[in-house]
Length: 224
Image 1: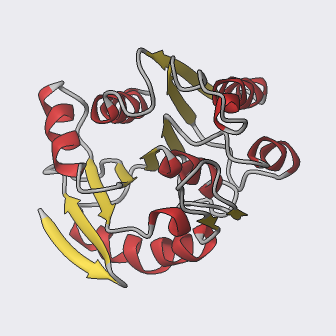
Image 2 (image 1 turned 180 degrees about the horizontal axis):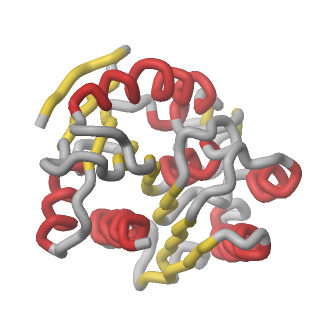
């Protein structure tokens, strides 16, 4: 394990012992990367390098454009995804990949909640990632379905993983209640483009089994 900090972001690399394996970038709300990797290894997933990024300015770094607070006492999303993605591509990725053996077989990007939204959005800004997993992704985000259908993805991904809790859309909130409909619509859109996709509906609300859902998404990417 290697750790470093770039512009207040905490990066942890869990390098694979084998050369020429995949690298998955996981943006995290706290520091759940180590536990996610432990469960993945216990579950017998294929070997890979995990790069976990924490201490993010969540509502800025993970949001593609500005959105006012969507429920009472919430913080606004301030639209800094492009800035963070530039930092990720230009500084974090090159530094992290100094720690790996051989070459990178492929790169994946994964995240939960807003980080799941960011994973999908990043595919429209860079061709660096060829697989993405959006676990309980914030695909209620105003304008995201329109953005996806009206913009061109930089590189057609090998596969895309989507998941959601089956209670996440059961809310009176005008934004949040669209999350399942939007997620299903987006997954269907990509499937219609010939991309290998899956949509997994899990029991529970947004906060249930976040780590378990993250593990499932990354494992699915690695199994393709």
